[in-house]
Length: 170
Image 1 (spheres, rainbow, N blue to C red):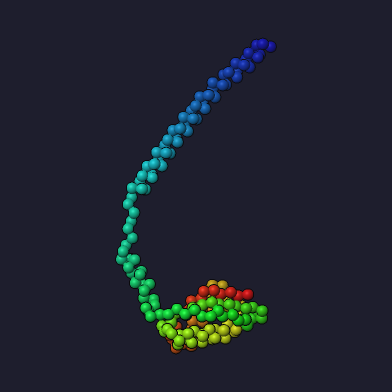
Image 2 (image 1 turned 90 degrees about the horizontal axis):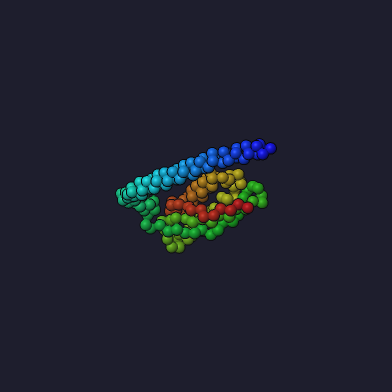
């Protein structure tokens, strides 16, 4: 029995030295790979940072600022319309509220009077709409275009643009 236990102990001792070199080789391999990855990352970072930033072309910025200036003339006035609240044609219990502004070429009392006329005309137009006509992005675009067209007709072309700030349908 003593001989069997000696063989068992010897077998365990033989297995222990075989596992320690594999652990050491694993640790060495991990250290080598870590060093290589640090070196590669450092070289990549130096390469990226060494490239000078590209300057923005000045001619392109000047052309864009000119394009922004030419949309409206220098004599435009932005008039806020009073909030427009009215019911829709269908469904019967649907209400709509629009807050918008007009971009006009005129100023003073005549512009305010025209803004009041445009708001009155917008109320009359909104009462003829149904809810499916103004649903979605295309519905909002069509509503804005229709209101702008009505504003231009009402003011004899003095309105350049209509800006819709809020649109709430309840």
